[in-house]
Amino acid sequence: MLRDDDALWDLVESGLFGDPALHILDEDVAEITNLEDGGAPRYLETPEVTEEDYMEEEERIAFTSLRDQVRLCCNVNTKPAARDKATEWVFVPGTQNQLGLDFALCCRALGTRQHLIQVRAFYQLYIRQIIFSKPLPFLATPLPELLACEILYHFGDEELDAAKVVWLWPGIRADILLDRLIHKMPRPRAQAAMERLEERGYVALWSGFWWFTGRNPSMLSPSSRARFKWSDQIP
Image (cartoon, rainbow, N blue to C red):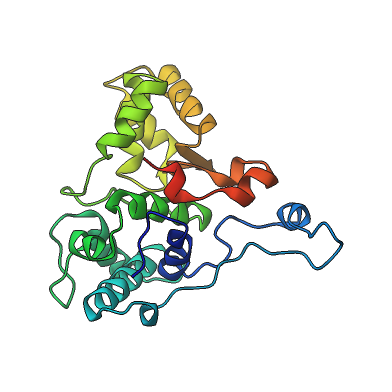
């Protein structure tokens, strides 16, 4: 039985997101993982878990439900209507799929933290440069309390307010973000808050669009990136 509270989460992650190079492997990372004896490099790709790796039928069904919906949410070639429906399943509590299963139930069946998958999904949207034309649905799960407390510990209310807005709109345009924060803080302070969040990897910017990432392994050194594990980094 697979559980995300150890290294097996890396395998489950590859199965959900269909991306064996989860740590954005590059030549630098490959270089530091070369064998000391001069042998072939040890690439850090993890084998992809499938539903066949689960013994219980309930777990197999839960896994395939998560995999299918997460990939529809995060894949570049997903059609807008299908992405909207999958996004609602992942982020709006109680939304059921065709089998009558919701996101929370599937996560419980696999012993997986819901917000860990959600944060990882946001990061996937960022690295795939998938821009949502509108915020998440009105009833979407807000920024999880554990992450909110962490941001408050490192920063303050302004950074938390900014993070809450970005959480609810993957790929929000920078000027729209500043407009949405204007009743909380002046634009220069909002911009400064976003820059501080970006420095610690809570958010990421690409071509004038912001995503919540929770952590941003692409900012790490090759050696740190090679050791990065989402389950260790997200509270």
